[in-house]
Length: 316
Image 1: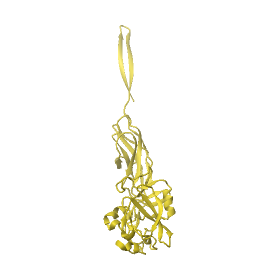
Image 2 (image 1 turned 90 degrees about the horizontal axis):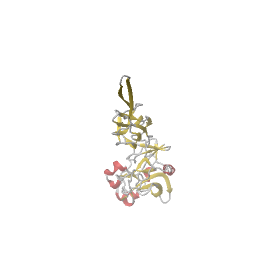
Image 3 (image 1 turned 180 degrees about the vertical axis):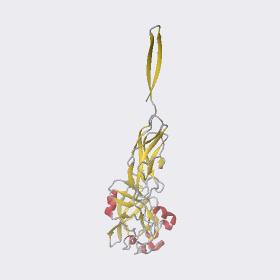
Image 4 (image 1 turned 90 degrees about the vertical axis):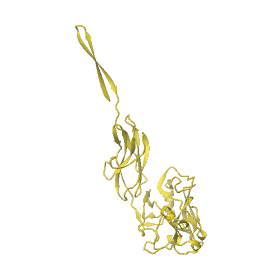
């Protein structure tokens, strides 16, 4: 606050001079006041943060966002992402992080007087998972569990033995492990991963990377019990309308569909199906699976072992 003084001189004939001082207050702008939001949805390469600007300092906020660094006091001169203008709460999605690395992040806001920063918060990114084919998978910690954040895409067992790539009418007659891409098209593989029959899941040579395993039905139920939304939001991959809950988890489940009877493919963009490690009925060759569709958040079911479904591995 600046005080302006105005001086008035009054001459009173022969009696001297009386000086009157008038004080006028004038407000000046200051840097913004901002808090850093808690860091959430931490994977091996990404994290979510943001901030809340409670006071713009008397001047328009022209830029806001978060900045991060491996140093304890990151600034806008380091890595940053911008998220609009004005006061209020905002969310920032940080990408391009290194796995298993400690970072510091803080929110910032800029007005004509300078840059205001929130408190610096620390977080550590998750490890990655690497399969026998050298595919690298982002991971996400949800509660006490660590899951792959992507579907499995491997073509060999852990010991290096190949998993046969089978397509067509042979699929439902198989009693040994097999995989295929949806509709036998490689274009689907990079997004949705591969589809496997249950014989590949149950093989003693292990299909998940070292230190990881096929989740049991109980482990899927524990994940579902968090009450968090497991689906990827929006309609980039999911058919519209995609009904998503308000609490995302970072699991980013995708609708990879399935390979069914006679090698027919179904439900791409409409549903995702994942194997569990549990058999349902040995005599009629069915096993437990977990299913998520565009209209629900997930439930357990069972299907024939020759079906081709996706796999998400969980850390040992």
